[in-house]
Structure formats: structure tokens, C-alpha cells
Image 1 (tube, rainbow, N blue to C red):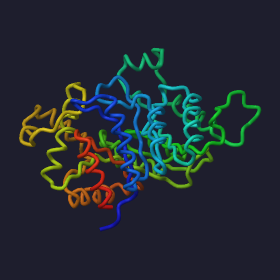
Image 2: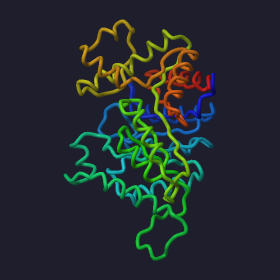
Image 3: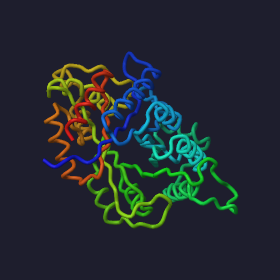
Image 4: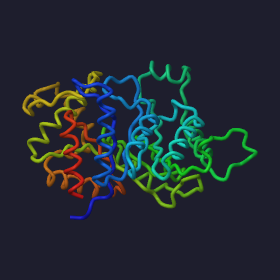
Length: 336
């Protein structure tokens, strides 16, 4: 069986039932330190707002906390939702992070708001929405702030930021995001851990249309990352039990119910929840998932890599018990 590509972690700093945001943030640091020891390549956190179960809203602040508590692992955003921010502000924030932790900071950018309409208005202070052209322009503007050497004629500069090595990734779950990544020559990460429907088509478009174009930080060839839900345990049965927390969360999404990550429940009980339509929606969202003992997970990941030809896998593991979550990543690290 062929070796797996490099593995990274996507962490939402999930708040679990019976826990707090403080617990979630401390657990994120503990998991990042554990991931570093296990040899994971990157540790990313994602911007979401007004969600009871997610503590990673202040993404750049959290990245600084994680980078300060680790030594070698790359830390970054998976991602920052750029329409919520001025490009200059993000350049300054990530320029500061890259100055403090050189060679360790990644900047993943998304186009979605990462929240609901009302919260989006509170973030942006305007009812106007961005067009697709605005997003491309904002990405280009942001990249220019990192460009060395400083142009003294440039009236607005990111300080810190100028000349900083901050690799830019484009993230998405649509064909449009794949086209933008290809057009700008950036690495592309697909959010197949919750929106897998367009995964294969997006990867095909990204690779077929990729063109190196001289953008700051752009690549000479395409590089694709695929996001996968993984719950790994010592037995298939234990993993299936732990996985019911994520299943409950995704089932709730079908009816607009959100909240802390639930406690796991018996598999038979989980199988009886929801209407057929709700269960079908949940199962579709969780298509790109590997659950089981190490051998089971290894086989499933090999299939995903063979299908997608992914250059990297980014793993998200929503497990209620923190010790079990650490064990899941430990077992996964041993099967590559």
C-alpha cells in the first residue's frame, strides 16, 4: 500500500457539551503540542462567528497563542474569511505573526462569511455584499502587502508585513474557488469535510487551469489539499461510537440546530435519529470520512488519495472527549 501524503490538522476549537470556550482553547494548544510531537505538518484553525460550539472566532489571536506554545509545526488559518476584513488588517496581523514566528505561519483565505447574515452585517458594518471580483482583488491586494522589497512610493504599507514569508492558500467548497486558486497560482484546499459534492470537479478544474503568474507566494505547479473527517480508535466499534458526536452535529445542521459538540451515544440510538431526508443530508455531508481502527482508516484514506491524488490531507477530528481525540490523532500518525 502506497504511503499517504503529508498529514495536517484542521481544528475548530470545538466547545463540547459540559465544556467551555476556555476549555476548548486550552485543548487546542494541548492538541497542537501533541501534533507537533507526532510529526503533523500544519495545524490550522478556522474563522467562524456567533456559533455556540466554536471558539476560533478571533483566528489570528488563536494562531499566535498556538504558535507561542509550539516550536516547529506550521500554524495558520484554515481559513480567514477575507470578505469580513480589510486586506491591510490581515496583512498586518499575519505579518506580525510571521515576524514573531518566522517560517511557521500559513494564511488560508476563504470567501464565505463564516456566519449568518445578521452577524455578517455586524462584522462588516454594511449591508453591501462583495462580488466575486472584489474577492480576487482583495487577495491580490493582500499579497502585495507582503511583497519585497518595500516600494517607498507605495502610500499604504503593512508594517510588519513587508517582505514577510507568509504562504497564501485559497480555500473553498465550490468550483469558483478552484478557478481563483488556479488563476492566481496558489495552493488550493477543498472543504470536503463538510461540502464534498464538488470535490472531484473542483480538483480537475484547479489542476487543468493552473497557471504560474508571478503573484507573491505563487507556485510553479498545482498543489491540492483535501479535508477529511477522521475518527480513529483501537477498534472499529469504539470509533463508530465516538463518531456519533459528529453525526449528531451534522444531523442538527439539517434543521438549523447548532450548539456544543454532543456527547457520543450508542450507535443503534444514533441510527434511529432524524427523518430519512435529514439522515441523507447528513450522510452526504460526511462522505469524505474515515472512521475505524487504524487498518480501517488507513484503507479508507488510501482510497481517498487514490481518487483525488491529493498532495496533502488535512484532518479534522471532532471527538467529544479530549483524551480520545488525542488518541485518534496518535493512531492516525502511526499509519502513514
